[in-house]
Length: 330
Ligand SMILES: Cc1ncc(C[n+]2csc(CCOP(=O)(O)OP(=O)(O)O)c2C)c(N)n1
Ligand SMILES: [Mg+2]
Image 1 (tube, helix red, strand yellow):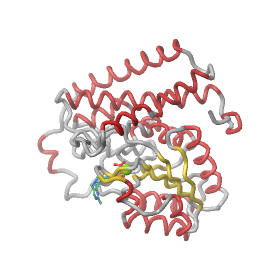
Image 2 (cartoon, rainbow, N blue to C red):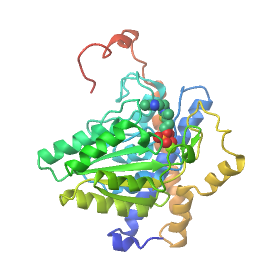
Image 3 (cartoon, rainbow, N blue to C red):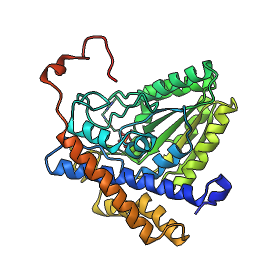
């Protein structure tokens, strides 16, 4: 395990990090259960990416702005979007904070938690985060804007245009490429010819670094350093977190394009299991603590599922609102 004390972290911090990874995973697992029970139409999962998400979130501070992507469930949960709100969106209920039940689930947003709203075309979150970083710089704020994006999506034009602008204007922005090696069924070998995607930073005149995305402490370290550089006026950073997509692309995908062996290996490399075992081996947590966390998370998730399932659906007339007219949702 990385020397966490040298990162300014305590044993309590490591427990918080694991707890957040576990809560994200357990909400995600419940979503699959609800989908397979025929209760919700769609899941796009973050399983296997929790270490990156929480390592990143833990290095962020009050007032930072984020532009997450659809797999960032553990990240947005840590930022403050409750399990109840995630389930409301999954059921397509009226009180869904993202869209009032209109958008697909996992288009996370929360004004209260500085999470920008998401568009469905991948990589559009990059120019959004860059714009937020420009505003932070113009306002003289001691904050950064972040965006996460899949490695496949990092081949879109928006990625290049956004990061080029961030580089030119030395913006307080951190872009994290989540390299889970697949864009739906397309493997990384057919997506890009570069050795490392973080090397693209050179072309934007910014700092770039590849990191083990299965290690929350490694991600925390590079994120903390990137944030410090941004606030020191040294501009943006491009991080490539190498991680895994443990599930199929979504609940509508049958990932037979990966061999059974490959899928089994992903489960063996599960970042949550790995971090848990490190904490156990270093006697930072024990089985009793794990049982308490399991019980706590089960209660949160059971209550949230029940409340969201019982919540009302939108009125039929609402299908016509906020489509062509002006206005904004809360
Ligand atoms: C511009 C655009 N093209 C295609 C799609 C359909 N689409 C949604 S997710 C996805 C795969 C993205 O892969 P990657 O960026 O690697 O992210 P991952 O799903 O692996 O986390 C595609 C092609 C889209 N939403 N937007
Ligand atoms: Mg991918």
